[in-house]
Length: 92
Image 1 (tube, one colour):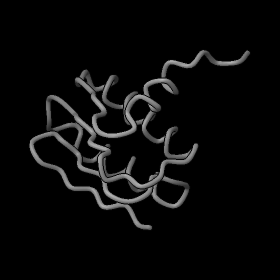
Image 2 (cartoon, one colour):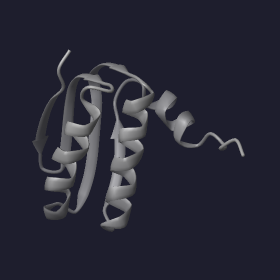
Image 3 (cartoon, helix red, strand yellow):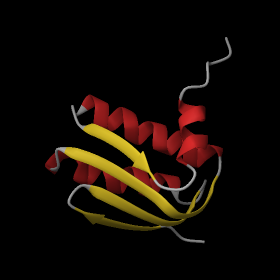
Image 4 (cartoon, one colour):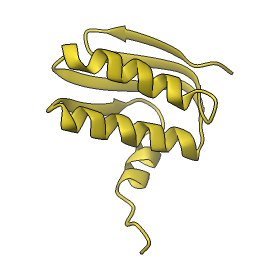
């Protein structure tokens, strides 16, 4: 399924799958608009599936926001799983 991205006042509403076929377009879209907003919120309520590439893409969005001194939040159903992934210790 394709990924729809709607933006309203710094909130990105995602609908569809964040996977290998959609993660690059999400990153490109985000990088294009992050420079003009102060606070970034990604709403994943309508995301039907996130694979490993999708999680990596969300991590890249976080790093992009951080590098641009933006506040970054992910909200919606499934956030706890992403939170756990973001905070999981890396294997050496």
